[in-house]
Length: 222
Length: 222
DNA sequence: GATGCCAAATTGGGATACCAAACTGGCATC
DNA sequence: GATGCCAGTTTGGTATCCCAATTTGGCATC
Image 1: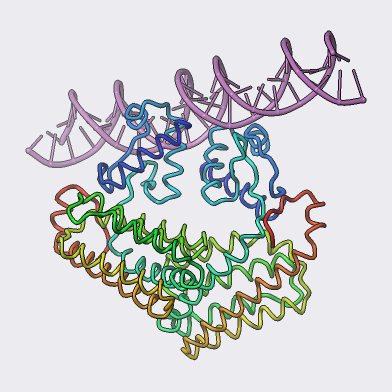
Image 2: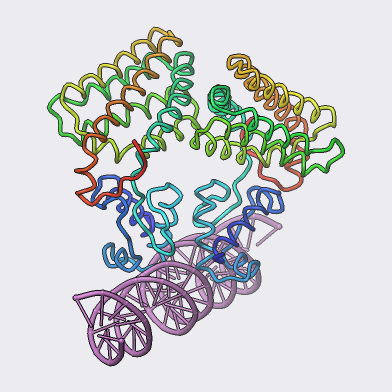
């Protein structure tokens, strides 16, 4: 694989895992020494990440994209539009085997699994659910939306109970799709998305001061 | 503005206006001489356009993204999800003045205006309509979807009557939003999007042989 | 005339050189 | 002590250089 893609993937991972603080400045020369390539592939990777909105320009400088709590409400609306459409199409198109495969994804996550695991499965579920729609544009858009939410979800302080609730909602949606009840499935996924927003905003609002203290650029009214 | 952005914008325009044929190979050195910059900004522009899916890699080479007729159906579904959500939010949020501004956009396009004008207004309408939703994610996604349809729309052979029909549908949607009838507006935009798909596919299917003869890479079953 | 093969040219990936603009730090001034 | 200013440093933008890989063209061979 080209150096540019290696740098892109590694830097992407560092940003999404919060190894690099939101708002932190990135100099091309630091990245050059950090990843052992020259500026050419570093710059290509930055341009790519800029298109994914994981880094952005601040004047002439590059910074890790800040987390914008103001986006969360709009992102929730966006997901409602996409995911209700996705589950409706899924009801019409997914085979039982397809649905079982998504259920397996949920089952593979043990109750005492590490936080990373829950985080990953919580994202993957929505993407795989989207895939049942058979529409790649929906898949890509939902995947991008989950990426935009990803870092905020890391910051959320989640009780084991809250995680259990979210997973129960996931299972419920799958059941309704299996029964081909499109209206109920759309309603359920919509409710789940809103619940997620509420949990997230409540947690982040409570913890906002602490997050800023950790040096994270958190902007926008939650 | 930086050279990279100039090159990006010019090249983007050339691709969207079909000055560069879909599937055509682009060498970095040709672009370098064509736009009078060095390879560094050229390459940055290409990486950017790759993220917009207007150019893509073919092995190590760069090519203008082919037109994929197979995408049109999925894109239509995608737009249905996005635009019905957008008009529903618009009914709740847009002011009468906002709606009038979109109507002015339509009125500014004379019946005998050149083809470019109809093409542009036909795209802008949907983006400005999306803006009435107040949700930037919907705006961006709809804008990107219209860009993906843009070149296929150029290829469409459109009678004056067909254009008139499309514009009448646009006005009808606006009226329903003005009356705050969300269900009817959603229904109307959805019908319009499907009509557009049908017109487009019928026209392209008829003309496919001719398009290939012009050297355009047109892939996928329509 | 078809085919196989090798040298030359071209291409993209990467590294580096150079420059102008922005930033920094410290010193002189008030 | 606060303020203004200038030299030195750092940075991103651009141009250019080098290299390995691929493509190309033509020539020898069959």
